[in-house]
Amino acid sequence: MTLVMGMITTHDLWKTYVMGDEEIHALRGLSINIERGEYVAIMGPSGSGKSTLMNLIGCLDTPSRGSYLLNGKEVAAMNDDDLARIRNEEIGFVFQTFNLLPRATALHNVELPLVYAGVSGKDRIERAKAALEKVELTQRASHRPNELSGGQRQRVAIARALVNNPSILLADEPTGNLDSKTGEEIMAVFERLLLATEDAHELYRKYGGFEAIPYPERWMSLLRNPPKQAN
Ligand code: ADP
Ligand code: MG
Picture (cartoon, rainbow, N blue to C red):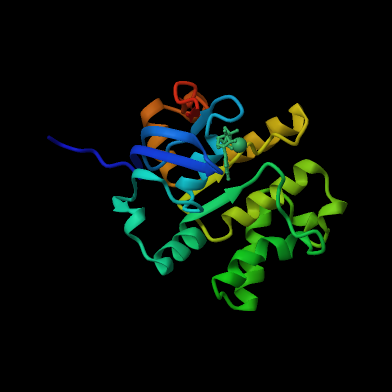
């Protein structure tokens, strides 16, 4: 049997939260495969386990059972140093509520992951500026979050997620706190970023033109995986 290994592969993934004497199965045996260059939307009603899955994929949390292979490597077998490196270098995370430091400028917010990665000051500023340019916020680099609109705050958060050149960009309801027009603008930013990657050339060949690429490329539903409370 030939096994085509994706970048993100889960097999029979479970996440069970224990609350007192109650068990909540947020994920019940989920098996998914996502290839490099894919643009995937995970859909499902509130409470269906979307955030739980994103946190597992982003190595922010560990599964109760089952396997998660990232680039062919079992995440559960990694040590703390490996995990810290992966979280810092391989994964960019964008949240519904932006999660920016309120007193720091846009530039400083974007610089932060580089501080943790031990990048020197001059390099850091250059890379943070380049990331802000990618989301068209160069003009707002010295503004603090409360001097920015919701859409601009989310673009700062996207720049922060990109500054380490991660191989995976995860966004948990990134338009949830925005009006629909601003939400569309944020989705357009993600699409533009995807098209700027090397893997976009692959998509270009596959569909015969950027305009023909359906966005998101794939929808994944957690509807059939509703969390159940065991009694
Ligand atoms: P979604 O993001 O799709 O709304 P979540 O992944 O946040 O869903 O939650 C899935 C289920 O797990 C829900 O029933 C939720 O209440 C429960 N849950 C999520 N996080 C925790 C937690 N830290 N402790 C206990 N239960 C949790
Ligand atoms: Mg959620």
